Length: 173
Image 1 (tube, rainbow, N blue to C red):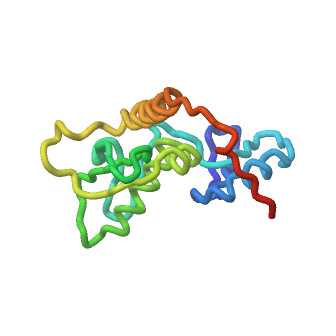
Image 2 (cartoon, rainbow, N blue to C red):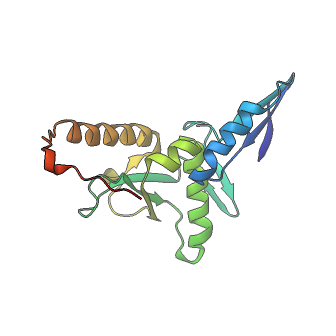
């Protein structure tokens, strides 16, 4: 549950599932059954804030487009997974838990809770190292995810499978 005031005349309550997919439906159902109250906004799941609205301050660290960049991640075993390697400018392995929590919160704000939980299969977090020209700014992450989704869809739309009668099996439980 998050609460705030988007402007001086309204209050907003955001019901979050904290990324737990099985609770997404519950949050939507809760909002659907919520009463309509003047000057109140009820929202299911954290909305996408975009690059300008996504900054997380946690302890001594600040997570924003100024301190984070990403690279596409790949897996030969799971070629359809959308993986992202996130580099943090001030990465310190001694504080990896705090840094990982900050990065996950940042991605939640940047992409929105539902998009982050359902569109990225794996996030790997580490230092921002090597040549910076290999890294992409966080503002391009949404476009990268969309491009990856389109690639996966095109890959499977081009496959044509012809089913024969003996390809089908019926199980009765």
